[in-house]
Structures are given as structure tokens and as C-alpha cells.
Amino acid sequence: MSAARATLVQDTPAHTVDAFHRGRFWLVQPKQAGHRAGMDAMMLAAAVPSSFAGRLADFGAGAGAAGLAVLSRCPDAEAVLIERSPEMAAFAATTLAHPGNAHLNDRASVLAADVALSGQARAATGLA
Image 1 (cartoon, rainbow, N blue to C red):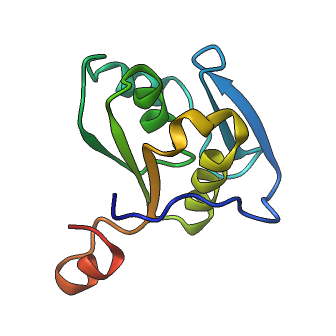
Image 2 (tube, rainbow, N blue to C red):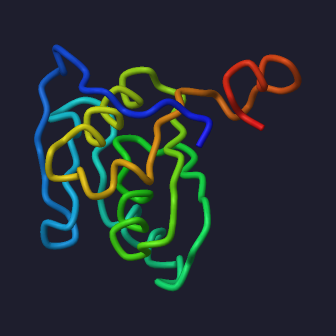
């Protein structure tokens, strides 16, 4: 995968660590400000067949809930968590670095990028 692997982000703002899919993965997300994952991410992930074996892009990934939900059900899937907000991309990286997600970490990466960019600016962020 071309995107950078996750590393633990120091000085993470006020956050919670929440179990999803009955503890199959953990999400580090903002406690009060910013986007918190909910049913919308789980419904989106449920639309991916459990037999999916490929690479997916989670655009607007936030802390990574939808992408990690797919990975927790699809053992042959990989995900790139793409997030425009540097703060939320940091939460996604911290989520991947969480010890409870070690079994998913080798199949996921975070890319801080704005998908609305085009041309060379788009390529410079790592987006194809």
C-alpha cells in the first residue's frame, strides 16, 4: 500500500476509546468536538459483502470506523483511510496504532488528503 503506516500520535486531544463489532476493533475518536462514528459508518460497511477480497478506499474516514468494520469482517480486504482533516487523520492513525487493532494494522493505512484536489496537487498527496 502506498499510504504511510499508522504511528501513535502523541498528545491526542480529549478522546474516547470505543469498542465496535463486539470488540473486534477499537476506535479512538474525539470526545466532544469533531466527528464521532455511529450507525451511518456501520451501515456503509455492512453494504460490503463479507466475501470482499480487495482494496477499498474509505473517503472521509474520520477515525476509521467504516473501513475497519469492513476489515473486521473481510479477512482478505485492505483499506486506505482517507481523511482531509489533519486532526481526524491523526485520530485514524491513533486508532490503527491501538493495541486492540494490531490484527488489522497490516491491512490498513491512513492518508491525509483532500480528494477534491486535481492534477499534480492530487498526485502530490498520494492519491492516484
